[in-house]
Length: 71
Image (cartoon, rainbow, N blue to C red; front, side, top):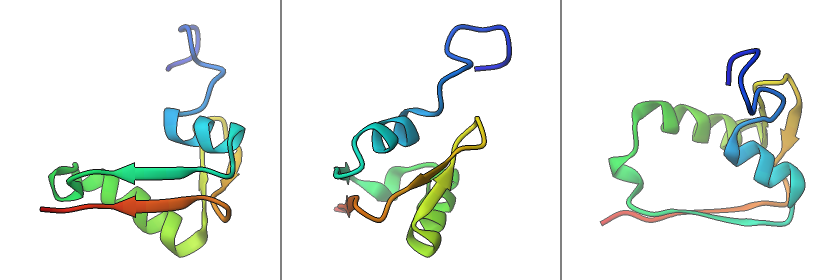
């Protein structure tokens, strides 16, 4: 959220969940239907093993299992 709005202090939903629960399994069902920006995020996670949230915090995905399904 932009400055001044509720939720500004929080990161994004995905990065917040992984930051709070680093040993997680994330399922992306029917990944082929996702927006192209979602693929860019996946590439960053798969290449670097981490994401930077909107607050500039680096969230480590090294203990997270990511499963993607397609039809």
